[in-house]
Image (cartoon, rainbow, N blue to C red):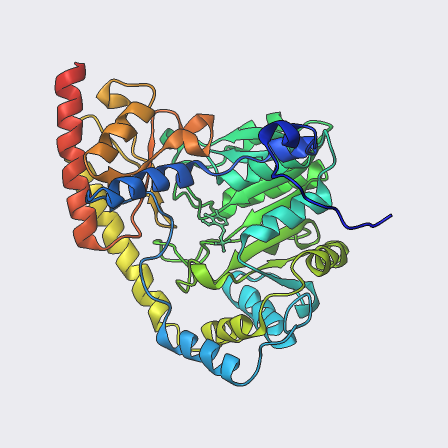
Length: 411
Ligand SMILES: Cc1ncc(COP(=O)(O)O)c(C=O)c1O
């Protein structure tokens, strides 16, 4: 009998029902931000002008010397398969970079290059979390953490971050959340969506808990270079005995305005390197070598562009805070890093932000409800200030007018 299937009619939804999916296929949601973005884009195609404060993406071009290095690498024929864990030169440069910036003791053999930072979340959770295992995740927090934990059958446990505490991790709260089933703790500093940065003392208290309860830690430091204090944010991986249980996530997307290049990395405890490399071999084989050459130029070339972008984000942060303070009913905690903030809107007399977000979109400014990042985001908006100053000013003007209208109709 021929093994060739003869397709005689297209799949109808009834017939598709006879082809069951794996249960896990329904356990992986998309991202709330994407929904708001597509609604904003739909309005734009109808001719409306929308200010985008929902997108977490630098508006700067990738610095020219990085672009040139990528192009030169393509011209030089770096267009074939490369080693699954990444090019030796880039792995060596990254090991030196994390040692220099955060004092993390790691050799090049622990560095694995990935297409953006996100796969480090995915691969780490796949390699560490069994069905029924609990994973403590920040709430509000980056949505991929809970999504991936659910996908593998794990149980996300919310670690509340509260505005009145500058969205810091409260070690006592964390201690209470740890159970017999806790396998992994996820940290994100500087944080999306809160802009919070964990201090050395907080990290020490958290590390003590991780050590006492034998937890793995995933430290998402994708915003490591976007900080507004005098010193760079410290890393839990640099604390005594923590490197052997901590996966460090970082990358090029935010620091070097390279979101579309898809270049990130994990620094893994030795035990995890081979399973993750095997996932790469079976999944995407390698990150393009010419992209890695661009990454090498980013790390080893001049850093003025990073300094300039950081200064500009800081100026934008201050400008947004200034304008928000002029809107009655809205209050905000000044973020210490990344390019996000979470204005509190409960002063406008609402508990659910969604209708207000819809009204803002109609008024021409796209922002996200805090609940896109977890239940503890209720009563907040998430706003990205990775947009040009004139856009921010106009977006905040529209927000002020919409808030005034909201108050007139709802109070
Ligand atoms: C907290 C956090 N981690 C990881 C990522 C993923 O970054 P990348 O685009 O490099 O995959 C993002 C991107 O928005 C993020 O906000």
